[in-house]
Image (cartoon, rainbow, N blue to C red; front, side, top):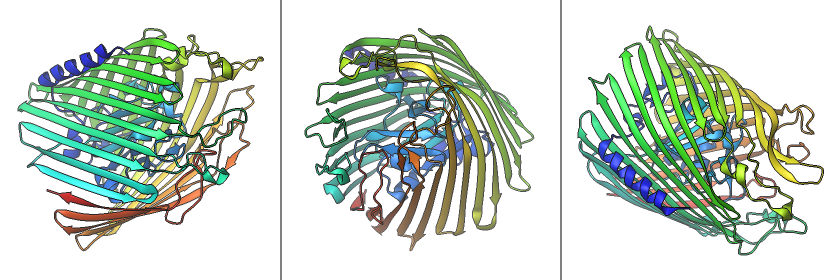
Length: 630
């Protein structure tokens, strides 16, 4: 991979930063219940017609989640599976869609890896350090976000400094010889805002291959992460921001060596991962906030090096320019243009490149302070596949007298084949013919209808959403009569289901939340051996419960429960996996305003379960630590 592109991206990013402004996402945290992912602009969440869930920094801290994947397990309509613990490949499914159907952003940077099958993002090494909030937008979102947003968008927004200088250091340790150290500082004035966070995680881990199958070797894991934000506001209508995140990790793995190809311990087998994400963005407001412009550049560099000699290096560089015209108090118009270049190189595959030029339009209409509608259309021009057009419509109606919100959405989506799917090298040992340069984009269409009800008694909030997504031209492995395998557009499928959420606050100190998701997935490929079968690793039933109790003005106690129902480990639906229930407990106590003690117990009842067939999961684990603030 040419290093000149990385230098170019960093240099151009800094230049844009000097000309630009702070990220629109930052205002989210300042304005309370405001989200940015649904419309790519600030909007009160009550006006959003799409299905959106928010995980806040406070919830992450109270639950003591150490990875983004663990924080996402409580989100309705979303499932997480990890191949073993501590660095094992980690996938996220939104409403049954494939992992590659979810676009993952961090401070505006697209994190999906061009060298991965389907360009899916692997959450294995993403820690929850320095995160302000996570917004999960469900359903097809290609109109605003292009390829990979067929199933939804996960937008991760990091913290930005303000106020006087603040610093902290924390250290914790626990089961599996785990140790984690974290330090950070932040602050800001009207001119300058800054935040820096560094962390280090070391653990002896567990056996990636399930130990109950006779695999005694533990697989250690290490992770170092740096996250930084820098913003400057030279004028009241002009500011700029640079966000950077770098992580370096090493995970020992297990595998399925010949001749039996059964998952087992593999001594000395590991993967080293380096990931760099950089985003610089400018925002200029003109004519008394009539015309808002956002100019940005994003860079993503991901490397994976395996001890057996295989390596993968993917890069993406994206330029975007967005305009929002506040035409009237009832109408906002958005126009955006983008250019994305992707590069990939692996062992046996020389560097490949793909380019996409995009334009999108969106109209937001607000009537009677009760009816909020968005209409959008997008055209993407890929240098290989040509043009793809997508559209989306959402609406929300508020009945303020009763505290009722009725909402709905319909949209289309697509996913371009990844560079790996197009050009992967042939592997004759496994009868794999390699990539297929004739692949077409995958496509989807989906809708949802929901109702929300707010009740003043105990600050109760109830929500119900019914959804359906249809997929076609899905890319899958195919096998010819000679047992050669290859990629092709063959599958059709759909997912549908129901999401229920409830939250209430019986007293000021106690908050209770519960969710239930029913998801039905089916293969609709007529003539296929899997026709009518349920997709692998999609549970039909999932429940979560969270109770958070703050007391004595110094202490906090959190109880989290996750139930995952039965699901299949294969597309033929012959290997059924057992359901499981996990209970996690976390607590903290502020000894002084500068000293906090904290601890947690994961898998309190020591349940034995698997998220991926053959891979181990941790039993009961206890962790504790101290945090010092300055």
